[in-house]
Image 1 (cartoon, rainbow, N blue to C red):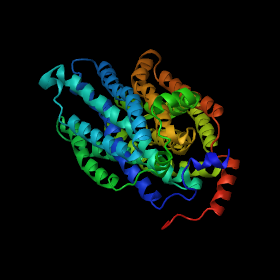
Image 2 (spheres, rainbow, N blue to C red):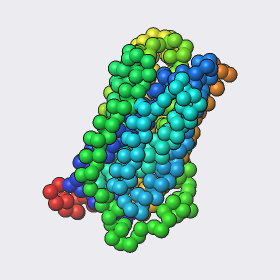
Image 3 (cartoon, rainbow, N blue to C red):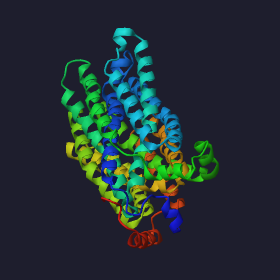
Image 4 (spheres, rainbow, N blue to C red):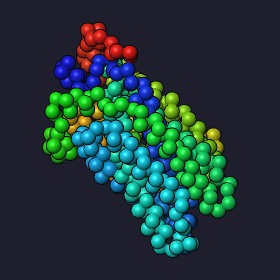
Length: 445
């Protein structure tokens, strides 16, 4: 690693707006996660009978999870569009546009008619809106994480991107708090209110994001005339290996979450191991802990590197699959809560905390948005249909099927981490420290 390669990370001391950008990007992540993950909670608890009535509970759940998966399948296309525009016109426009689209689509879900009202048109409309959600969410992450990464000091890339990544557990917490509060409402209002309420968050997010400055790294690329004509094609041609590794790294986190959280809440509900209130309460506790866990894991990568955190977390995940379901199967509320907390705060948050800095460092600045977005979002196709696949495995193998699938995803991440280069090892940290001593602090920092 040379100083020239480190220069692709922005100013050694970061910019005067580093914290404001991180918070602004994080707020957007909160809103988009509230919208997108809220759909997962609704799919597990409400959408089966509302949009797919007449079927037995398992079949209705399968149909509901298939609709959930459609949104994840659309995310790679959103990542391609957002990554392309992020490398061509800038990170900030992508942030604002994705937030508007996501907000309007989520609000629309709260207004959708059910099957009892319009018949087959209801699930069709649900799928259409879910696709729009997927496109917006796919475009979101690359812009948000790169804005924070490229404004941050070299030695604190993990810390600042961790703020953005922590937006996801905040959004998860808000979504589940609202669902918990609305659980006792009459009829469809139990799931409509959380989606309709999201419009308030969108308005706040737009105000904050409108004040966030453009990435200094993108401005440098533009000033030097290095804007790539077709960044998607170039990054696939030159860095396809990094894209493949990134996909496998991400599968361990996002598909693992789909088993340990999204499917788990449905499993606990259908097997009557926990009530809806107990499940949502456990999710709220896990989300609250996850806010601080994500930032702590991210900061740890600044001290020990990105790769070690990923390796040890995935190794733990391989071993945790069966114990995770054994704990849940006790039906004891405390065991259910412990299961979800460990699944989220350890298995998921540690990987998400490392991704924020590691993924951008795998690609050149001029194609970074495209490369990081592709790696991040293509894996979403696997995770999106994981609850559906997990339900099928449960039908065939009982709880052992989902448990083994979780461990398999963690194993994929472990192998990928072992095969991916460290981007913030002892040598990089030493060079960064030397550069920091030699460079003046940014004005007003």
